[in-house]
Image 1 (cartoon, rainbow, N blue to C red):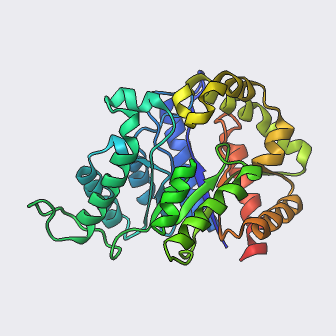
Image 2: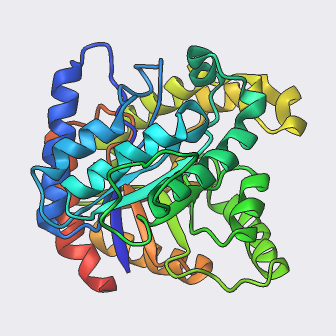
Length: 339
């Protein structure tokens, strides 16, 4: 089983962007030393309390120079906001610089603010996403695309692994029909919802005559390990509250599925009032090493994932040293039980 780490990188009012970047790079370097498989960085724009990471490829390039083995993932590129040829060039350059360590995550995102800032209609996002994905694959695998030679080519052949962020039912269907591995889980598809969404993916796979791809599901969950469950809660509860408050600030009706937009205010109110016990039960793996081992084993049996994407740095204010300590304890006591 593979264990990864994920970053969204929020910035509280008393934090400094320079320090946030340095902490992320240091934690990624430590993850490399500890044996984590991949570091995944999210792309988010125009919402600093939620994230100060609009250009994850630049941070991954910095991480590449400070690491040896850890793979470099984007979770995810917001495809409709990029010119696909430019994105193909940038990702291929990172693959060359890193010696072939890139993992390409693709998605559309859920925040209209990102689209408005780039002057892109969110209603066009699915078409732009699907067309862009095909253009990028062509740029990586064909000598010439639309009369031009796109360089460099990635080291990995035929191209870096591609994984889709599956949030909506439509994306689960598209990913299954086209046999893409997926990210799934987290606040968008918490544990009680995930099984239903994975059935959509499985049905689409079968309808298209596909078998599951290797390493098909990267289950993304909030994770924190410590001395005991009380200590973990004391460490991360304020940071969790900061995360859900930040989401409530930037979510808009268009962020929700069409049938749910009338429930927007209720969704926002739930984000602002969600309590620790709810997050713990439907989104998280929070506790001492033995508790985390048992919970991962149960979830692995339930969903069949072979990769767990651990979101240690949730909400941004748990503290750099606390995050490092949790990563080290997880690598020392939890990971060996699954490898």
